[in-house]
Image 1: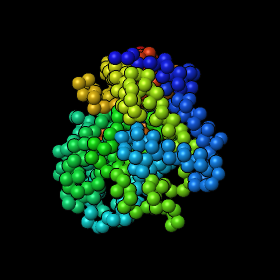
Image 2 (image 1 turned 45 degrees about the horizontal axis):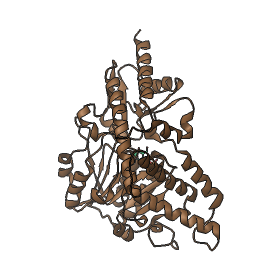
Image 3 (image 1 turned 60 degrees about the horizontal axis):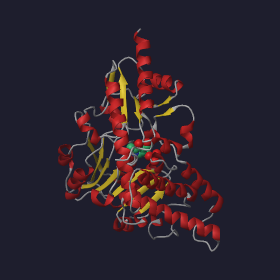
Image 4 (image 1 turned 90 degrees about the horizontal axis):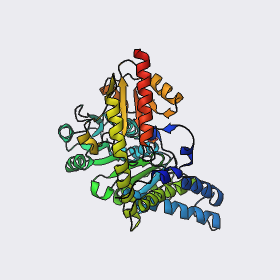
Length: 414
Ligand SMILES: Cc1ncc(COP(=O)(O)O)c(C=O)c1O
């Protein structure tokens, strides 16, 4: 197996050249130079509306088309017609909830989870309230840290119109068995809307085999610019009522893309996918675009795994640390390297401040995993201390942050 080219990887990311260990990757990742160059190219060469008869507009058209095709390749979609690009995952989901709910009737039911980020909860709650639809809450299992089919099944009925669930949690890092959960929901006749924001930076997404109907992610979490990306089954996207201006195009994918697209950011989205292809080739992959992407994910996962083990084992050995997520190494294939904990004597916020001063960039708070924090009785104001690794981090950074946390804890004890 090829050794992971960590130096070459880090050299791709200008922001990693400074001091400081960037460990807030679940909040948003750094970007490779090719993304910065592409955004700048989009602004320089293609700052125009789509569909014109002159070169700048034609360049914008091309960027838009390539961005959809790139996102389709990343998610394993059959074409760019299945991809809707918007400002963010949350904005897209609010918009989709508006479209979905037009067919809901009082007496209908929807299911949202207590593990999801609010971006996949609040839009559905508001839509349900507007249409008089009943909301059923799906908990997660506090021992497995996942959403389990036995908790879903009793909530499903012929009244269920939608299951909205996450693929990987931005608090616990657990990866749900979306395929099985989706199968149960589909048997009951519900649509399934998956939030893959936290999975996409770490694990390969295969929309064709997952069984769900919609899947959303955010490119700024996978080394790209601030955009939301939604995959939907082409037939469903084509039928779904578009919440758009009257005279906008009704063809796919623009049917659900409201207003003028952020062309320069879409250029950056393509470059982010090209970065995966570059990484796939550097780590021994070959073949077509999708094969290179698959190789990149294999390499990232293999590289991240031992760092995640070190981080979790190291945190577990520290007094007073309670990790909020899977800690059994035998189950690490169903978690991403997003690790949250609370400390018995330290506020998460003061730990985050102390670590920040020492050059370890981490986050504290409930991180919009609002229901999960409540279910876990985590102080709403203070939240957890979250450390999230990406494939450009190093074991030296992991050892460093562990040492810094230990110093903080010991300083208080002594
Ligand atoms: C799991 C999860 N879902 C949704 C979102 C929201 O994404 P966006 O910022 O694109 O709206 C986030 C952001 O942190 C997230 O972690």
